[in-house]
Amino acid sequence: MDEPKAEEQSLNHLATRILVMNFASVQTTSTTFVHALYYLALRTNEYLEPYGLKETLRMHPVATLVVFRTTLKGYTFSNGTLIPKGTMVSVPTESAHYDQNNYQNAAEFIGFRYVDKSELEGGTSRRHDVVSTSGDFMSFGIGRHACPGKIFAAIIMNIMMLAHLVLNYDLKLEHEGVRPKDIYIGATRIPHPKAAIMLKKRV
Ligand code: HEM
Image (cartoon, rainbow, N blue to C red; front, side, top):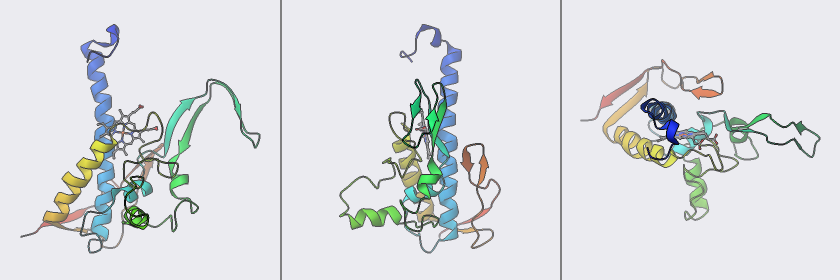
């Protein structure tokens, strides 16, 4: 609260900042969790243990465009493409996430994909962790302005929500075997808003 400049310390400004933070944190975490839930309900036998959230985020990035920047000077790529000064540019997540050069069977959801990759490499590197960003995983953006809430979000989703559900409930989709289709609103990708999941508390 001490950080903003004088004119931004008004209650109005501070409240607006909190609302923006709510938007950045609540909608992203809840929609990603619903994506994971759909997979859990779809393949409940396969994923009785909490599985890597990263594969869910690879296939269903909340933002299909990240790293929005406005160019301060013109730039010409080696193929002659010119980006003039003052142009807004961004990076598409899905084309990297679904690229066969980056991922084998890229269009397929393989719940333990990153867990397996990590184990193949001896399990010591952190680069397959859900919070580790790279050119082939940009669901939390990349670079200086990558999501600062990613660790918090991963902990909430993995430990508090997924683990709790897996330990205490049996799940199934209303229409078994059919994963509800995502919808797009501009550059935002969200899980199907009306699909039903049935939950039964284990006794
Ligand atoms: C699954 C959950 C989440 C996802 C998928 C997500 C995704 C993203 C993405 C894609 C960006 C833009 C990065 C870029 O353009 O390079 C971003 C930025 C941001 N996120 Fe998250 N986010 C999540 C949760 C959260 C949470 C829980 C918080 C806060 C507690 C948060 C706070 C922010 C903030 C403040 C920014 C702006 C950072 C900046 O511009 O420097 N996010 N997030």
